[in-house]
Image 1 (cartoon, each protein chain N blue to C red):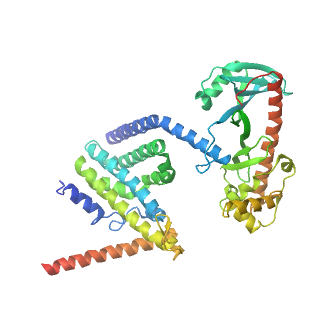
Image 2 (image 1 turned 45 degrees about the vertical axis):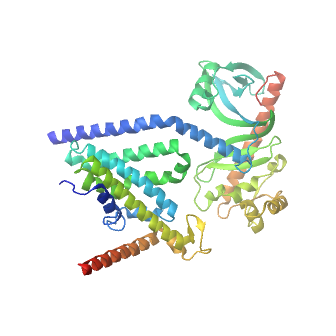
Image 3 (image 1 turned 120 degrees about the vertical axis):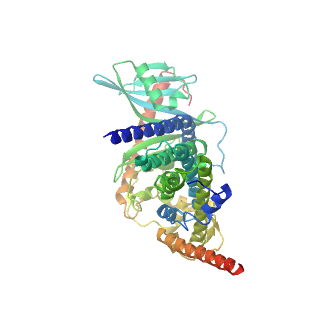
Length: 294
Length: 206
């Protein structure tokens, strides 16, 4: 009995010591890690827009984050937008018809707005107690010299297995500039091919008009198209080939038609909803003559 | 049991006479799974080196306080702690290296070679000697991984350090994990043969 107690005691002390060391390491490194994640996120965003080390980012390009919240008040529901203004942030609530209900400044630092917890807390305070505030999604408006050049949309939709998380880049006319698959759990070798260039890049250049009836076809992907999508051919030739196949539907992945279809439907849905919401938001901003950063 | 070897002898022992891969044949599964290229081998080797040195010194410092019945859990906890600390530090301060090494670092908790070194050496010897022993074993593992990686990369993908040197792929089979065992086996035979030949030559002189 005494042995057992000593062993338990010693093991507990060992565990506590190990936990202290690991905990302090976590606290010390956490800030740098967060910073790295942020830098990495930024890199994904710029690469979606077509910028890399070979093609540097223009100096006057800026990203403005727009957060959409759903505000519930007993029975009524409204949509809230956390927007960056010329000076500081403000929270704009619209009712379901798109009429402005309220517009209040939000006292939050630019660095704090990136942290979900701090942001949610600030929004809750502004909306007032007793109201339910749920974060819906975030959109990034990309501006160059104050002119909107693109939008980055975060989205999640069902796949064949679980959810597929994507990030889309679209230009102001809602033509797709890039598609990145951020997370998925599709089958390796089949549905997991959705993250390959030859599938993702098929969405590039599809206009808003084309998206309306964009479909998935079960046909073999032509070889020259495949090579161009994968980036295996010279830039000039690739542009020619991509233009030739530009108005085609999406070629389904071999053995993963359902995954391909889900991605197609999901991407279409994200862009359609975004275009609808953005029109309402822009109309509301214009009506109230509210100045925003983008 | 006092240690009568100098620091240099301890390092040499880790690399040559008690090389973890070629002589002790420990930690084969992860080693064989990852050593497909020189760079991969080097990354895992460096990660093991750090964890081995830190764990050896820690256990050696606390050797009189560890209850003999729970020494194995204590070793595992120590290794896990250092692996976590190194993992966090890499992720925070060397994100580019972490992107390549991250997956290897987490694997190290399951390495038999580290536990074995703690049990055989660090729990009996002084922290100073344990440091050199850990360094020697880590270096021995690193050298072994790089050599295997070199052979497999050259034969499997016709390249060295990612640069195409042969222009063709002689035996794609060498990239697969099972081929790692063939390489290790052949290397072991080769090292034993050299040792035998060396001893015979030495014997003749005397």
